[in-house]
Image 1 (cartoon, one colour):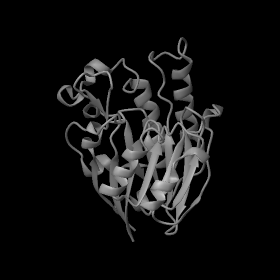
Image 2: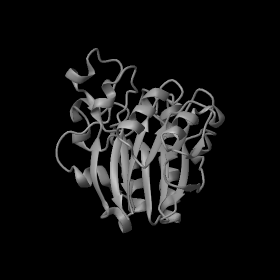
Image 3: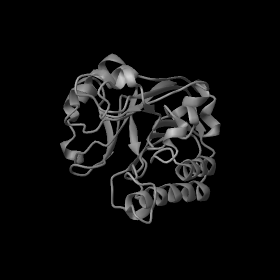
Length: 262
C-alpha cells in the first residue's frame, strides 16, 4: 500500500475552505493533516471535502483558536488526543489507518515573542509542551508511526533564512532546538523531509509582514514530517508546495508532503 500524506497549518479551515479543496483537488494527498483550524469540530466544513472523496475525519477543535484535524480518503479510526502541559488546548489528534500506521498530528504552541519563560508565559508553555511530548515518547516508544504538524521550531541552520539573525528569535533559539531534538530522540523519530531533501535552505512558513514574501524569501521550516525507524525507509518523495503560499488569501504556511510505501 502506497499513500501520500500532507501537513498544513491552514490558519482557519472555515476561512480557507476553498484553499483546502483546491489542495485536495489538485494535489490529492490520501491523508491531509491540518493545524490551527480555529473551529469547533461540528463547524468544520466537511461536506465539500467529502465530495472530493475525503469522507473520513478525526479532529479536536475549539472556537477561534488552535484545532487539529486529519482528513482522509482512506478509512481510519481515532487513536487518542493528548493535552500536553495541561493547557486545555486542541493541539493533538491521532488516527490509525487500516494498515496499522498511527498518524500523530501536532500543533505545538508558538511561544510568543520573547524567548524567556520568566517574562513570557507562552514561551514556558511551549517548552513544557515539548518536555511532556519527550517524556511520553520515552515512556511509550512509538512504533509504525508518523508524526506531522506545525512544530513551530526550525531546528537546522538551513531551516531559516539567517541562522545568525534568528538565534534570539522564537522558533530558532538554542533552547527550543534542544527541546525539539530531545523530543525527536526520545521517540527515535526520523526527519523524513530532511532524509529526502538533506541539503540546502528549506522553508514552509513566510511571515504575513513581508511586503513581498516571495522576493524577500525570509522563511523558516516550522512544519515537519517524522516517522519511526521501522517505517522511515518506506518514505520518499518529500516536497514543500511553496506555490500555496502565493494563493489568494493564503495561510502563511505551505503544505509539506511525503509518500510512504507500506
